Image (cartoon, rainbow, N blue to C red; front, side):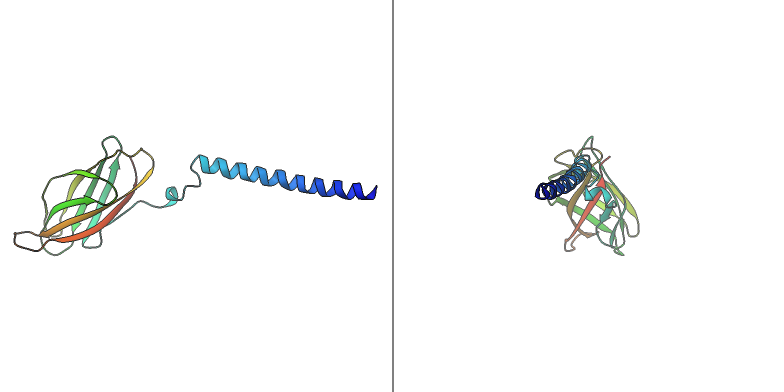
Length: 152
């Protein structure tokens, strides 16, 4: 008789903890399903092409797949952006082409992506920008950077 009582106590103990663990798993699953545990939602928006080509404003539009960048030229000389290439994404086109950015000034240009991201999600797009000093006859340089922002 004593043996059955001990077994029943152990069974009730394990059952209670089992229900508690099952409840915790359901809560974590629901939080994950609805996006509350998505780490990219917790990260801030970011645009980085280095200090010499500084991002002033940036956004990604879901309606037309356009990445809008406003860049400030901190090189100390006028530069011409001659080519923009998407690293993972297909950069279909960009305007204006080529783009001249005077020393210390900002210019905005748009890059059309090959696919349209969903609004509200965080999207990272990496680019390689080819530029040269204005005036012609100068060597071209590559600058890589990225935009990580909530799609509008």
